[in-house]
Image (tube, rainbow, N blue to C red; front, side):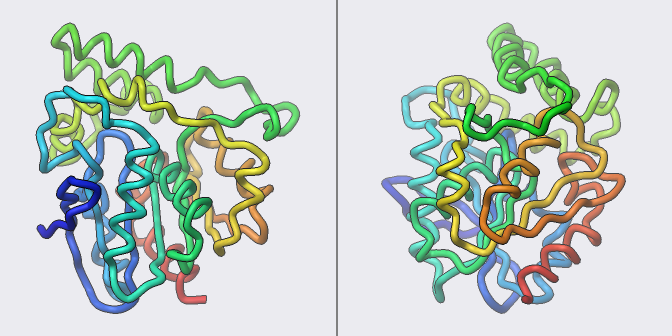
Length: 270
C-alpha cells in the first residue's frame, strides 16, 4: 500500500503491474480492494492503480465532518491523477466511482486517455429521459436512507444486506463471499456521509461534454435503475462503446473477472 497527499488527505492506493497507468475508482462501500478479482487480468498490460477515496478503508472513519461530498471526491481524484506519471492516464470507475470518473472526464479531459464506466451510479435529469416502455424502478436513494437508519440503530449487517439486495435481488447477500462482506463492513459508516453528499444528476449537456473515448459496461443480470442509466448515457456520449458481461450483476468484475478483464483490455488496447 502506498499513498499520495491530496488536498490535505493521504489517499491510499495499490499498484500492480507495468505499462500505461490505469487508475481504478471504487463505488459505495468499496475501497482499493474492490478490484482484487481483476488485478491479474488488467495488470498483464497496465500499471493498475487502485485507489481508496477519502474516508474509506484503510481509514476507519467516524462519520464526523462535512467533507464527504461528491465534489470533494471528484477534486481528490483529479488531484491524485495529477500525481500519476506518465500522463494522461486511463480511468475506470464502478457505480458511485463511475459517477466520479464521469465528472473527472467532464472537468479535466486533459488528464485522461480513455474512460471506462462500469454501471455508473446517480440519477438522470429530465433532459435524459429513459426509453419509452422502460419499467419504473424505485430509486436506490431510498435504500440508502433506510440503510442509514439501520446503521444509526446499530444494525450494520441489516443495513448492508438491505443495500446489497436492493441492487442484486432478494437473497443475494448470503451468496457474497466472506472477504467481500468484510470490505463492505469496513466501510459501513461511509453510508452516513453519502446521505448528504450533494450528488448532481446527469444532464444531456453533461453527457455531450464527454470527449474522452469511453466504454460503458453493464452486467447482463443487473436489474433496476443501474441497468438503464449506463445505456442512456452511452446514447449521448460521442462515439461511446458498450459491452455487457453476460450472467453477471452489478459487481460484474467479481462475478466474471476474466470476461470483464478481456473487455476492458480490448478497449484500452485500441
